[in-house]
Image (cartoon, rainbow, N blue to C red; front, side, top):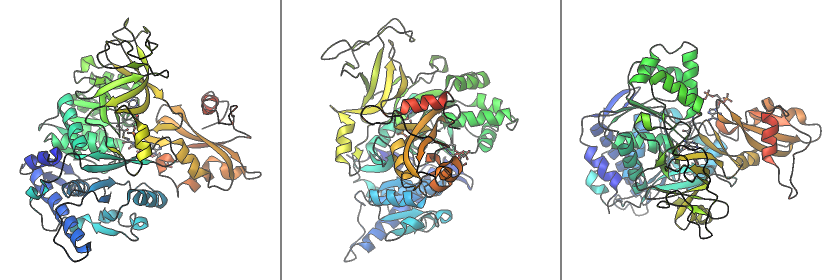
Length: 542
Ligand code: MLC
Ligand code: AMP
């Protein structure tokens, strides 16, 4: 079966309607597709030249991984679509990554070619050795191949590789197929009412699912326009909203927090009226504090539409489009074709069709009649498992991790959730203390610890997430210093040292030097005790 993603792009490809509007100006769907087909043509032609014997250009890159180091805007989108149309797998990289991280990602993904924009050529230097580096500005001028030649791309071909942190030291590359991406975009188009009339204001990073799939592809495949900004800047976003340049925004909670700070500074004239005029404002990637949701409601008349998603599954659960039916603090119910189930520690299961009760082989999974909305009926708590056509294919080169992530065909999210009697879900935390969320970025405490352990002045370290109003969780490193080297482990010097090794958003905001770490009988650091001590001010942590 042909790729549904390519079929949809082909339908849109002759339209003169605006697809994308960046700081250089507007671009129609026809112009965008023309550029994407030129990128495709150049990738295939260069592939043929590299192949021995100078064969004719192949029809597909057969899953070659192509890294993108391109600034947000039209060149990013044409490069991304060009890779997909060529049968390659796009690996979007962030210019925020330091050289060591870029090199690790490119190696792990087996990247042979890198597409760069002119302004990021220097950033790509650490991964240029032994790899072909193509300038998007050049390949966009290559001859476009015919779209018909893409018809042999299949729905289950992988299209996108996104690295996501887990409970192992290094991140894993999640492979999403053409079908996954098409299904995710279609589910959100239908659930959130996206159409050709919409203009989505886009200021999300493009190396994660929220920016690339949930926002960009939903808007693009619905035939709407995307107003893409070079980065999130609260003043700029507030001004765009104030002047009514969009009908919809998608954001992480920290972005809402930043917008309110902008309003409080008096730096957002006309923002309230612009925000009220938006058709839709969604929040995800991290829990939206009820206080923020209510502040948005006071300003606009409705709380943001909060939904739950994950790199591996797309958006699984969503509040309704009808503002009156949204529930603050809850993430809604499963989208069509998505199945959700809750499994508690004892293996008891709540699954669809159980009417809220437990369907455990062993029976009776601790349902209680807590004061949830829809109340009085059984409430289930446990790990959230998801199944459906939007769920990813697996982790690149990590068969063990892929196997461990699934059970009986269900993807285990690692999130602890509660289901109300009327089928609405709320997230309660993670099954692992080592997964943190800061400003919508998922971080692995183990990965950060691994990097910090290379510092000669650090004898022992535990990285924890401390609840924080602005970031959701604030990353704090609790450090035991080598004798006489405490000063090197203070916040300032440690952050400066870490800049070479970790993306800026992974670097601990604070470092606390302690004489020893609390450990249990098994010798494992008791991280909840550290979080509590910092939150209660018994350890400085700020
Ligand atoms: C930036 N910094 C962060 C940070 N973002 N620190 C911790 N956590 C973060 N998320 C650092 C900067 O490097 C800088 O450090 C300092 O904080 C101030 O930077 P800033 O310029 O004020 O921040 P800014 O660049 O504006 O970034 C804030 C943000 C950004 C909210 C715009 O974090 C962001 O784009 N978050 C979105 C993440 C996202 O898209 N997640 C989706 C994952 S997919 P210094 O040292 O230089 O001062 C997913 C699935 C789903 O979760 O359901 O959606
Ligand atoms: P990522 O791996 O970066 O895609 O992050 C996915 C994780 O983000 C999920 O497993 C959740 O822990 C978290 N998340 C996403 N949306 C929400 C939400 N609305 N509320 C709370 N957590 C969320």
